[in-house]
Length: 111
Image (spheres, rainbow, N blue to C red):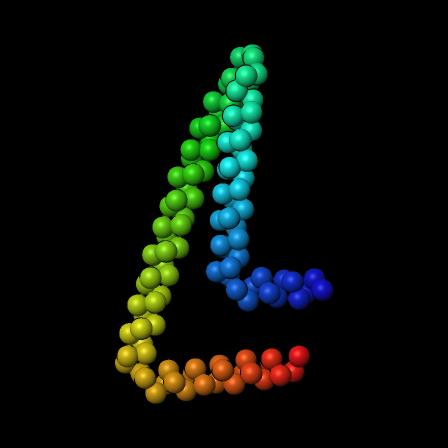
């Protein structure tokens, strides 16, 4: 079971990245909620900790936005390259698509 799980993670890296991004968004949202919940806590230590957490959250949010932009840009570039390849080599693309379809059909039929 472990091998199957690990194999599926490597089979679709885009889904893994999407899951990671969603998990990071949830962590940021939870941390923001925690900051709002502890706003009334007194003490210099609590205030300093909240300030550090807020600063860290802003940095993480910026990095998330940058990472999302990079993923979007790479996806657009890959789509352009694929589109150009298909236009330059339509018969090869049709052959590759047919082979991939046949392999998927065989795999589905085996289950």
